[in-house]
Image 1 (cartoon, rainbow, N blue to C red):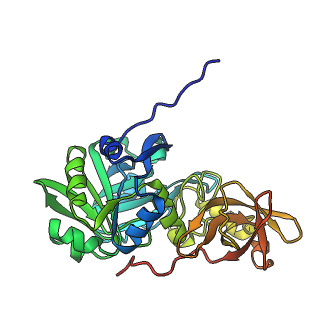
Image 2: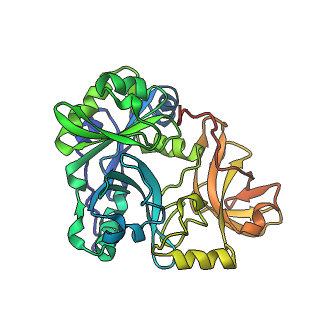
Amino acid sequence: MNVTQEILKHTTLYTDHLARHARMVPFGGWEMPVQYRTGILAEYGHTRKAVGIFDTCHMGEFLIHGDCRESGLDAIVSMPLVDMPIATCRYGTMLNENGGTIDDLIVFREKAKEWFIVVNGGTTPKDAKHFCKHLKQPDVFEDISTAIGKIDVQGPLSRDVLKTLIPGIEKLAFYTFGHFKLFGQEIRVSRTGYTGELGFEIYCPTDAIFAIWRLLLENKRVQPAGLGARDVLRLEVGYSLYGHELNEDITPLEAGLQRFIDFRKEFIGKEALLRQKRQGLLRTIIGLTSATRRVPRQDQKIYAETGELIGIISSGTFSPYLQKGIGLGYIAPAQAGLHHKIYFGDDKNEAAITTRTFYPNGSLKT
């Protein structure tokens, strides 16, 4: 039998992860650390209380040159770009003609006519093709992913740790960024993240990433964290993960991302979303809390008390904050307000429909 084995890519920090006894797993075509020796719960707890740092070098980065409308960029993304001040970031989505989500992304306005875009690592190749297909002038696009390294610095003490190394970052407001110097290299630092805590994301030349990673870890308040802790952190604050809550068959309306859509402008997928609004959603995202420590798992079915199949789990984890299993899933909108109890999985574990914010005490905007 001929079996084709996927060749996984490695970030620049791969050898350091191995030296720190990380357990490595496949993720979006990359071999990434899911946890270190201390374990997922310890990494989660340290990020909630102090500072966790995450290797996110697998993420994709693009540069777009030119006016956002004249270049065609404005029509590729769902959120407004024209009114973005320079040195700000904006989260949003890019869609196919059916309104499905090709990817979620963050757009940075570097200059009046220069844009830096961050996309998911596993979708970078297809995202690049989508941009090149729909930009009016292909030469305005640059895929700089291999030249850029990225570290996420997250936790309530992240500002205190970083401002001693990178003076000036303490002035960054939420979803803004700036250019700074470290080790003689120009770096980009944004006040963004994926944990619900105060945090920053560092973008630098690939050959500088190892030194910055090691420098951060010299501080006793800083510990490395892997994909496992990242997933618990993002689920506790109800953030979507591409491939779970989002994909090319799920629209941002279904995913609860209406505030990142600007219907006043033209964009790919707009007509499909307007049609969906007129006809009504067939599914909508929900949060659910297990009655026990049992964890909902992706693709498990959701049932009503009557035994009727009403939906499916998209993500789940154990919440250290609630000491219960939590999850996100999709059900028909009409079902959302009907059920005091729901059940998930073949063995019908009891749960309740809840808000998608399970952890309300984050330091995100402090």
